[in-house]
Length: 443
Image 1 (cartoon, rainbow, N blue to C red):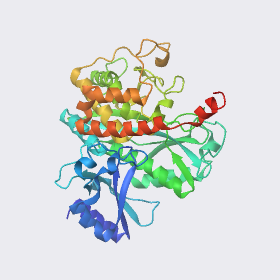
Image 2: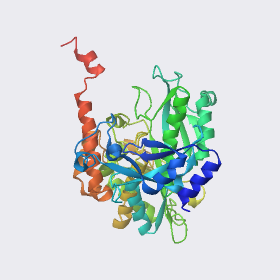
Image 3: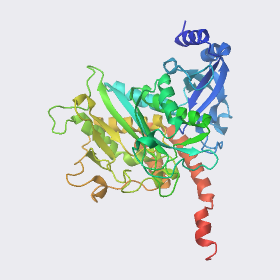
Image 4: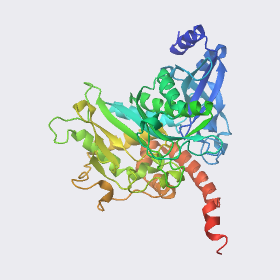
C-alpha cells in the first residue's frame, strides 16, 4: 500500500469525508479541488486534472497570453499528484483533509514554472553541495472588517497585551494551525492598527515553504469564517506600516548535521560559508528582486526608516540592512534574515531565490564586503548601492540578467515576467483617486 493510500485509509477510519488537492500558484495562493474521499485514491494514483494555466493566472485571474501555459499548449490540463508528507486534517473545515500537490503534464513531465517545482530545483542544488536548508518565514498581516475593509481598532500599540488578544480570531489561529504542523513560536500585535505578526517554527527542505503556504492560507480561511479579512497586502493604507515577510535561513551540513553558518573561532561567530552565502545574496539581490517584491504595491513599503531595506547591505543585528545576521547564545542558532521579502511574496519563490543566490555565492566564494556599522545603520550609509524602487525596474533586471535565468530556468522567467507585465499594464491603465483629486479641478 502506498503512503497516500494508507493515509486515505486512516482518514476514512477517522470519519474524514473530503480531501482537498491544493496547488500553490505563482502568488502563493492555494488553488484546489475538493474530492470525496472515496474517489481520492484514484485521483492520487492517476493525477487529478486541473486547468494547466491555473498556476500562472495573474492577480485578477486573467488568462495571460505568452506564459507558455495557455494558448501554447492549447489550454490543456495539468495533473495534480499529492505529496504524502503534506497530509493534514484541516481543523476549521468539517471532516476535511488536504494534500499539497505537485503538477505534471499528461506525459509525466513537471510544470517547471510552478513554484513548488522551482523550489525543488534549488533544494536539489543545495543537497548536491552537501547542505540541507532550514527556512522560516515571519509574516505580518492586517485583520480588517469585511464590510468597511478598515482596521478593527485605530490606535498604534505594538506589543500591547490588550491589543494582542483583542480579536478572538487570533486565538483560533494560534490553536488551530499547530494541528496542521505549523508550530507557533510567538504572536503579537504589530506597529500599525489592527496589524499582527505571528512567528512559527522553521522547517527543513520543502517543509519550510510548505509551512509558510499553510500558515498564510490558513490565516485567511479562519479570518473569513469569523467575518473578517486577513490581508497580507504589502502596503494597504497610506501612513500605516507595511507588512513584510522576513525570511530566515541557515544551511545544515548533511555529512555531520552541523550548522554550516556557525564558526566558534570567528569574531562574529559566522563561518566563511555564511559570508559567501551573504555575498551571493548581495551580488544577486537585483536579479531576484522581482520575485521577493512581486507587485507594484510592494515597492510602496520600500522606504527608509521603516525597517524595510533600501540598499544592498548586511549587518549584525541591523534591522535596516538587507541581510541581517542573527543568532544569540549557542552557535547552532546562527542564521541569516533576508529582510527584503514582503508579505505578498511567495515562500517557495523566496526560498528558491535565497538558496540559488546564496549557493552561487558559496560556489564563487563571493566576499560580502564590510558589514554596516559600527556606530551607524545600513540605511544611512551612502556607500551601499540602492535597491530598485519599482516593479518595472526590477522586472527589467529579472528578464535580462543571466543569473536570474540560471537560478529559475527559462520557462519560469518567461511565465513569471509575462504574467507580471500583464498585471503592470493593467495598473498603468488605471486612473487613481489621487490623480482626480490632484488635477481634476485645477486643470
